[in-house]
Length: 449
View 1 (tube, rainbow, N blue to C red):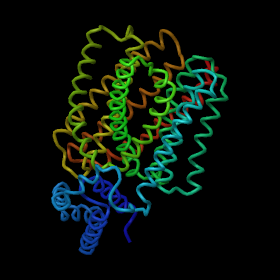
View 2: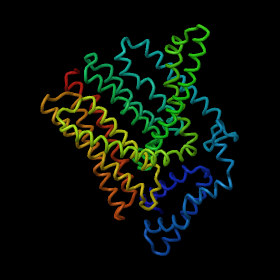
View 3: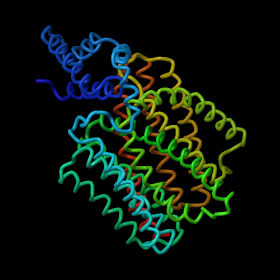
View 4: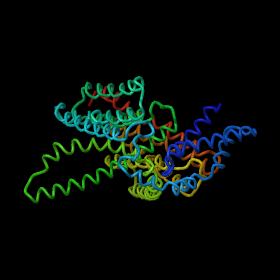
């Protein structure tokens, strides 16, 4: 009987194999059977579980080579993955493909209807801004609840945070346009995205592998949504141009009907596309990370040079601090996406060294920002915005410092890459917890101002 740690290793290996282009679920099952046979044989010779797993992986051969071999034998799959609906009548779960498309379109339309009704129900823009996430994210969570066939018990657990957030955002007597209201608007989507992640993981909330899958999904989801948005923008631009040439004002229809349905609906469609076509987009992840990692390093080093040349941190502009926080969040996202796209069994390479340089540069920027924030707090006093920003930067600093330490150990051959990957997945809920604090605790502490 395999122990839990071995099963976790096999689960992570299977998750990695499933992202390969030409390897179908049936192929993965066959490969897993071979892997388990190899592990059993190695265990019979006296090896422990970790050693047996590593030897068995090596005997299976390089996964890239295996993937290429499957691609040669089943090249038609690469094209079929691009088709909206597969040729087979049923998918692996026994659900007709047209039914999933119908569910997705219904949820997309439902999200649009909810947003359209939100314009009517909420009597001011501030209330609508507070609730926009609650109008859309339940439909995303609903898609994954349907896709993962969640039990009623798990579904009920997922409903609780939506209800709690809805009560807080609509019962708290926020000062219109106040700092705590703005912070709630900015942090509520973070909490809601974490809830969507729970639905995505299908009840396996403690699984590091599933958490990393959600990190990967988040990156690929962003790619798809941006592509859909860019395509939609081109289409809208052409339509506006055509209508203007014939003397018809198309903007009212665009603003009142098309955008309220298209923007939230595209979120559901993008999630479905990632689920349906994740094997195709898998190749984008390594390319994007290898392009943007060195470029981001150059940007961070340039920012450090500008800050140093400015002759001190006391006079750093507030807007610059906000922008720098956005850059640090981007760096963190790039780090997470890079780790999610990496083969955890591969040996350290040049790109791992570049990743360490990226993290070190981000730590230096974060330290400079923390110094500037503490200086501003000492000079001007506390405020909700400053405390929220300070807390976020402290969380980022802890995350990045320990990630750099683990990366150094990996590069020196003293730590497994799995430790670095596990650190990311287990630290991510901390950001969600901080967002909950900002949304629920900050307003009463600062008198809802």
